[in-house]
Amino acid sequence: MTKTGKLFIRIAGICSIIAPLLMLAADLLQIGGFRFEFTIVLWLAFVFFVPAIFGLTYLTASLESRPAIFGGASAFFGAMAGAAMQVLFRVWAILDEKNSPQTIELLQGSGKLIATTQMIGIFFPVGLLTLAICLYRTRFVNPLVALSLTAGAILFPVGRIGGFWWAFISSDILLLIAFGIIGWQLFSAGIDTLETENIPSSN
Image (cartoon, rainbow, N blue to C red; front, side, top):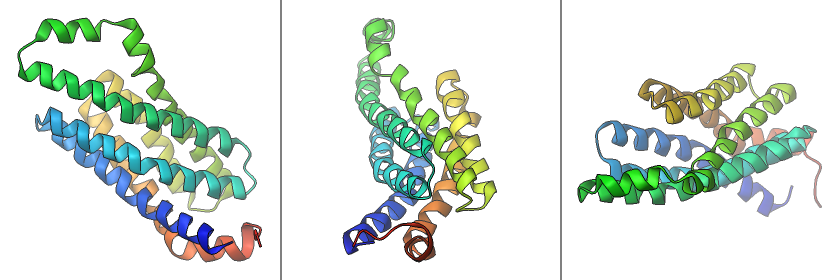
């Protein structure tokens, strides 16, 4: 692996730890009633998830897990949708502060708006679920890590679509455990393991 590749993996490892931490912080802000601030922090979380997803995809694909490409692409697309969605939610928060419930209802009732913003966000948990299966098959990490990622991916839409705070907080914690361990592996000992055993050198 080249020096650039090592740097990329290390950055992905750091982002893997930061992203779910920000997501948990954002959801705690939402529960606390800080709806505007919540959208900013959650937007940042999805931004940090992008290199984390790239790193996890590179890892699983390099370990000869073909579905990882689909999983990574799906999770990336969903993360982009999630980040874009926060602009809409920020507008809703401002309209709520300005006491404009009719405008909020109009926006929330727009099928075109929902289809092009909120609905496509489902690709994020679908991609994470696919990557979790790939992780389990490659055995790079403990199977419990893949199980944690699986449960977190499933609870993600349950909490956010259904509006169950216990579900999205549980999802945040499970994703933090999974991505935290994966991130640490990428940043430290996992890199050397990949270099010497699994990932072909690009030199």
